[in-house]
Image (cartoon, rainbow, N blue to C red; front, side, top):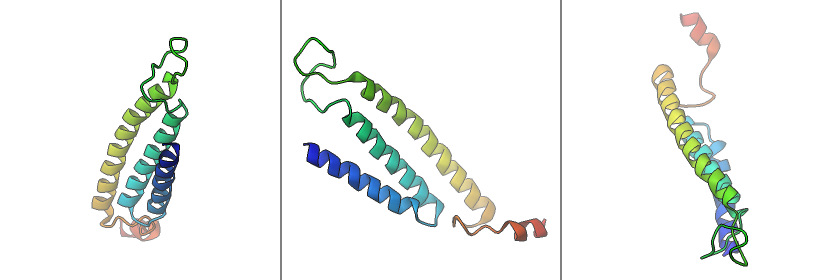
Length: 114
């Protein structure tokens, strides 16, 4: 179980780094979202992966830590809001500039045209 979990986190991290290094804005947004999912899975695993156990210390022999679960739940909500904001920002930049290339915008040419 732990091997599959670590392979999943590693695969998500590798794919997200690949997408972040792309030159277009939408793959960068998707890569950042995937990286946040990988970090969330990693944080979730710090609370011990125990099946069918209570998250209360003292009731059973093995227990899970509820703090990483709460942190991940909060991070999911914040990550969703930031992803929506990033997509809206990328669409707006594409409409203003006409391209979604990250390094395509030339500030000197735009200032001369105004």
